[in-house]
Length: 341
Length: 288
Image (cartoon, rainbow over all chains, first blue to last red; front, side, top):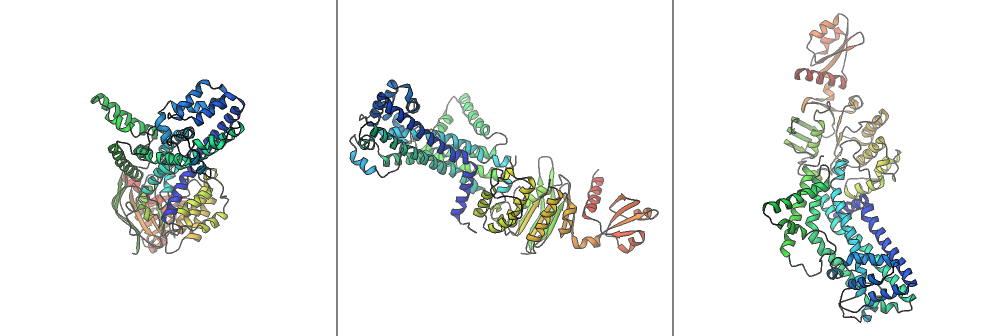
């Protein structure tokens, strides 16, 4: 007879994680595992190839105020082909906006070694080059997160209508508000928490592997690695970065939910076509791109600014949140009145 | 509150079709209602209106609640099986039990597990792997473990073989039904439910064409099997249906004194299905 509010919500979220087990649980875990394996491979290689090891040290310890990403590009230039993994990732990240991203997406929890790192910090206080290196992992996970969540949102209010299991869900004492909000919460909070958690584990493993590399190269791992990393800052930036992004992305996610609840054939088309049509119509009729600009500001972009100070465009943020509320209400209405396909 | 379900002037129009047309329905606790009608008669739409799953005109109250506005609250007291095979196919039986016990305040998990122990449904299996019969057994086990006051079953046994169907209704009657509960069953398979019904409603083209208490069934309807010369005399009495039987005809009368019919042949109470055919067949004739 457990039916208090928290256990209800737990059950609703658990249900989502069970249904989308592969995309919401296995994907981040396997991705984190893959990253760890790649880093392990590159560490083993770096240990053999002196030039790579040297370059690696440069990345980890560079003192200039430029971001870690720039440095990584240098490595890119004189690297061996064998180190492809690390460099590929770095390239992908550095082609985007390097500055913001190292700031924005980095995060890592405080672990037992952290106090040591505080005392060892030599460089200018703000910059922890190794944070930027670890930030790449987070960016990768966030890209994956957005892909997985968009897919989840488009399916979650459509699949049960298509296979008619909605008739079972509707026989349970759960209101459509609870259903829709639970799904939005999974998209905005639960799934990001899982992905960030997986990124975090991967970052810890990578830190440990890097220390192992330093140690085998007869350098002091504590100084070279822990001196250049600040886990507390990493954690705050990654979690905080996501929370800010979540506020921005919310209207887009709510729109996808609405499309999923409205779709008769393809939720993707239902989501994409009206937007494309409106943007084109506006450009043809008025020659302006107001809608496109308004929407673009809210598109999920793991590499765009999510720095902790609130973005200047507060009006757009608030308008987006108001739209979120309307779109969610629309999705609930559709769930109640137009659920039959 | 003695009326569990109260509907007046219930109507639902789809684009071209009047699916439900001015239906009145009033049920008290302890009723087992059989809702019987041909395909497209509006049974499913009527049941969905009672459950708040579809918009409709007219007044509906179920357990004193408006099903449309208070659907989630109503579902604490009302269970339904809307169709066969609507259980989510990706779920395992265990996950399904977890979900219902986390969500439904009146669900008794132990009881559901006891029901399932008597079937071949293993808790680790996925719904998608179960046969149609087992899926229905699973759904019934879940529903019977919920202490609800109203149970609505829309064609619950469609597509199942006769053994499953018999067991389904036996279980429903023995393990679930009591005078506090109200059950509505819509079905084509009239013979299998007729002995558990206390009331019967015939629907055709969105309208209720018969709404009878099974207790008064016997006094209202009679069927006479006539042979030979008596046939003409029997057919002269206003009747609602007549069909050939071996060596003669079976004629069904409504509201005719049995004493009048005794001399013509063997008098009995018609089966619900024969009455249904007579009534609906007659309707169809009038309609054309």
